[in-house]
Image 1 (cartoon, rainbow, N blue to C red):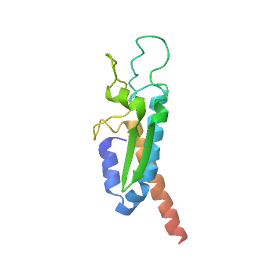
Image 2 (tube, rainbow, N blue to C red):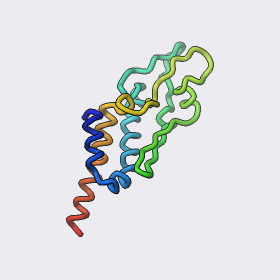
Image 3 (tube, rainbow, N blue to C red):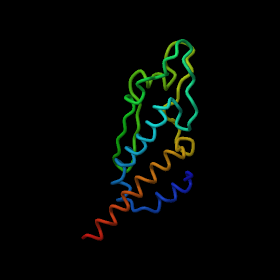
Image 4 (cartoon, rainbow, N blue to C red):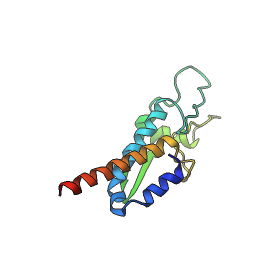
Length: 136
């Protein structure tokens, strides 16, 4: 699913459903990011640069440093600790920073994997709300 299709899909949903779906969407995006983080890749699948010295993987504990929350109709993803410093490029030396998540909004921030996760979370919530309405 491309970004424009996702935006059209979300805009067509009732606002209340979008508000209620924020935690589910945050969790889905978090899980999609964990796939790329654990593969030592940027969200678009680009591999992180290897260490200059040694063979240990880059940012071994990056997955533990990513958290998510959803409220007020928005999904929030954050990176904490030393991994956040590496992600921002705020460490000493000429370290090529690994990209954990994109800082910009829009098409580059929403990769196809993340768009699919958002769509699936919203579709599940929509389907659940239809089931609830049918029972009531």
